[in-house]
Length: 583
Image (cartoon, rainbow, N blue to C red; front, side, top):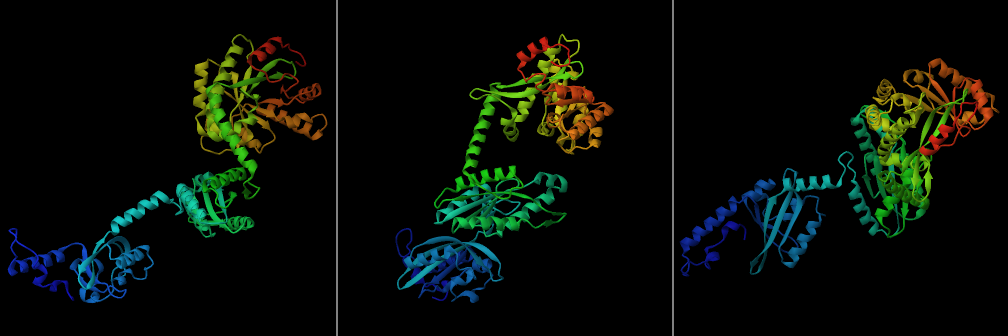
């Protein structure tokens, strides 16, 4: 059979008219022409091949096959159809075709083929055996599904890969790691890393440079030999390795560090990036999800100690992580239950002994552990975003207490409350304070916001403007722990602060340290020259009070004058207070 078109009328003698009589030779000829025309006009490629001794030479191809592949009939008849696969004959679908032909069964596959001009296309191939005595023939139907296949590939890539870096996304990384470790009999290693200060890079260089740095980071990580690499978040990556033994983990982590150590040269910038790295080693047959979680815990520890280098996961890290999760959950409940209160420590005129103000100190009345200082929960509150809610509630509470205390006082007390940089950066502080004043009825002069020295170094647009708007409202601004940070005298002139607080570290050794006496005197003189109130913290002895008063420091705060007390106790102590050299 050299040509499908050469079928004889005998092939159609089995056909009958509707009445059951034998079809005439004329009708068979007509039918033959119809079939020939139909097959030639089909939009799908049609081939017939004879299977012989492991080969499948083509006996017939239609016009659509010529259009699809670029080969004319005389070029392909007698050739094995495998030529369409080019050099890509290791596709799994090829093995399925061989198995189906050997078993004389039908098969449907989608595989990558090549046209005469070398261009690739995705071919949906349906093979059907033809029952002919003495012959093993196959009918093949070819359809170009390149557009559909490309859409499938694009959808798969969008679902499983990070667009910016070409790395796997988070979910696909976990699936790939599980699959990889399931077939590996040894230990496994997960490394997680984070670009330190990436937000500043985006802000300083622009998002185009930031995206280019992420792309280059992903490229370098893929060259480390990892089984799989993923971008897990904004600037966080993860790598999975199969380990021959536990000792090989450290060299791999060192290799990653070296790969990231060189400057990143991208269009628009040459940047030296710093990375926090955490890693975890898993037991054979362990869970990839648990290992990813442990590496993440180690990464968080590495972020807290940015100079400590890559951080392995430790058992204590897991316990610390559990405590943080528990603390976060308890903080949410505590805020809802109003378990946070303020204790107030008096501020005293060092010359007259008169109470002139107080600092509001946040406390958590934990139902199980009692009163807890801010050091136990502020970091967690800030990390989870709960600090914004906590800070707003606190401002309302302090302002309301200030109104109640000052309602009938001739000389009202000033109440200071600590405000974090997070609150300034993530909310309109002037709008919030204005709302607090209107709703509580407190006077602006009764409130002072305490900020840290580092806030003065924050050049984020809007921070200086927020300070000025707060001063326009009449709110005081105090620099806490002055002298322990990095602010310059120029910043004191630039920012509209009204008060500086001398850190307790200077006051505690005042009598025994001439250098600290010089510093405290200089700060007092500086405050007086700039028209700022100066408050010395940590005053615990009469000798310290006398020295501070003698050096011109006007106000003191510390255990000498009173411990932090709740509202009721503070009010009672205020009523008993008498102007004298000390309280």
